[in-house]
Length: 71
Image (cartoon, rainbow, N blue to C red; front, side, top):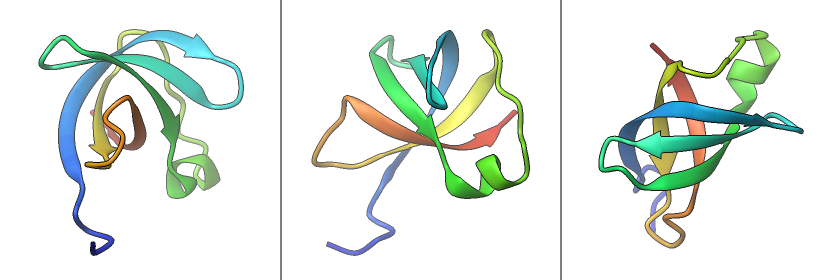
Protein backbone atom coordinates (compact mmCIF):
# COMPACT_ATOMS: atom_id res chain seq x y z
CA UNK A 1 0.00 0.00 0.00
CA UNK A 2 1.38 3.40 -0.99
CA UNK A 3 1.77 6.33 1.37
CA UNK A 4 -0.85 8.39 -0.44
CA UNK A 5 -3.62 5.76 -0.08
CA UNK A 6 -5.50 7.72 2.56
CA UNK A 7 -9.10 8.81 2.95
CA UNK A 8 -9.64 12.56 3.30
CA UNK A 9 -12.74 13.74 5.16
CA UNK A 10 -13.93 16.93 6.82
CA UNK A 11 -14.77 17.14 10.48
CA UNK A 12 -15.49 19.48 13.37
CA UNK A 13 -13.62 19.56 16.70
CA UNK A 14 -15.76 18.46 19.64
CA UNK A 15 -13.18 18.28 22.43
CA UNK A 16 -9.53 19.17 22.97
CA UNK A 17 -7.49 16.36 24.58
CA UNK A 18 -3.95 16.53 26.01
CA UNK A 19 -0.97 15.89 23.76
CA UNK A 20 -2.19 17.59 20.55
CA UNK A 21 -5.13 15.17 20.25
CA UNK A 22 -8.74 16.00 19.53
CA UNK A 23 -12.16 14.35 19.46
CA UNK A 24 -13.57 15.09 16.00
CA UNK A 25 -17.02 14.50 14.52
CA UNK A 26 -16.74 13.65 10.84
CA UNK A 27 -19.18 14.76 8.17
CA UNK A 28 -20.81 11.30 8.32
CA UNK A 29 -21.44 11.71 12.13
CA UNK A 30 -18.71 9.28 13.24
CA UNK A 31 -16.58 10.42 16.19
CA UNK A 32 -12.84 9.72 15.98
CA UNK A 33 -9.64 10.71 17.76
CA UNK A 34 -7.21 12.75 15.66
CA UNK A 35 -3.72 14.14 16.17
CA UNK A 36 -2.01 17.13 14.57
CA UNK A 37 0.37 16.52 11.67
CA UNK A 38 4.02 17.53 12.01
CA UNK A 39 3.90 20.54 9.70
CA UNK A 40 0.94 22.04 11.56
CA UNK A 41 2.74 21.49 14.87
CA UNK A 42 5.95 23.11 13.55
CA UNK A 43 4.08 26.20 12.33
CA UNK A 44 2.10 26.56 15.60
CA UNK A 45 -1.35 26.28 14.01
CA UNK A 46 -3.87 26.64 16.84
CA UNK A 47 -6.94 24.42 16.87
CA UNK A 48 -9.90 25.12 19.18
CA UNK A 49 -13.35 23.61 19.66
CA UNK A 50 -15.65 24.27 16.72
CA UNK A 51 -12.93 24.48 14.06
CA UNK A 52 -13.55 22.74 10.75
CA UNK A 53 -10.67 20.46 9.71
CA UNK A 54 -9.49 18.18 6.92
CA UNK A 55 -8.48 14.80 8.29
CA UNK A 56 -6.61 11.89 6.70
CA UNK A 57 -7.72 8.39 7.70
CA UNK A 58 -5.88 5.17 7.07
CA UNK A 59 -7.99 2.40 5.50
CA UNK A 60 -6.66 0.06 8.21
CA UNK A 61 -7.93 1.99 11.26
CA UNK A 62 -10.91 4.29 10.71
CA UNK A 63 -11.08 5.35 14.37
CA UNK A 64 -7.89 7.45 14.35
CA UNK A 65 -6.82 10.20 12.01
CA UNK A 66 -4.27 12.91 11.28
CA UNK A 67 -5.27 16.57 11.00
CA UNK A 68 -3.71 18.09 7.89
CA UNK A 69 -5.58 21.37 7.33
CA UNK A 70 -7.69 23.86 9.32
CA UNK A 71 -10.39 25.77 7.46
